[in-house]
Length: 293
Image 1: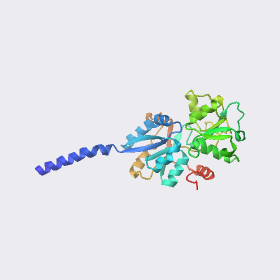
Image 2: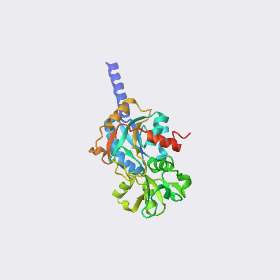
Image 3: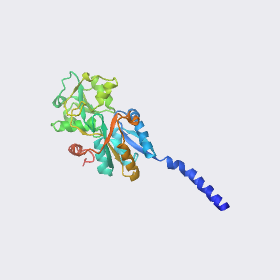
Image 4: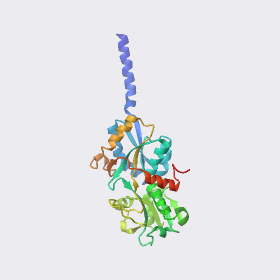
């Protein structure tokens, strides 16, 4: 009897010790933060809580500026990644990540790049940018604020690094737009949707700006200069267990526009992965990782 009682005491002691760990396992979702870490946290925090409830484990949002994404995935600082298509190509081909879904925004599952100048500057087409002072985000790291525009210009025989007066890299897309507005630079590269968001936030008025090489695409309502590419993709890194991967993927496809948990994320949900062929060609042309030689 004593031996049985002692065994039960040991069992419950172990259960008490191990139980907190069993329920405190944390998975980290790296989310691209082109407008800064605070805005990314505010936008995706509730979505992280939704995934936590679906998974039964804590899912922590880790905002990642474009230049920090590669280091974060290579060092396994995150378990999942929600980021643009060039990062998705990298983690898929270099690390063997599993692409689970493509983000579906109010504009659809695609986005592009904008080349924005100040109204009245006379900069309306790509050739007008020759000799001008331009800013983008980090070279080779930002899709909608460098890669899309650079590929668009190279296709027209323009090398931004040689044919502009200068091309400098900033830290936040909002700052690039405000620099154009205040006449500090001639033009800037930003992703689609940013200008409309900044107008809604009262920071700018769209009629203050000129969209360089403005184009129209049926079914795509946002201002843009470049071709359209797949929206951000949700990937599971290869060290994540299959059960967690399957549960997260199922949770993604449950998302609907009317869910309170995703209202701050301003999305419609997720769709099956959109083919990445177009962005792969752009990366190969520009010799950007994973095709950098």
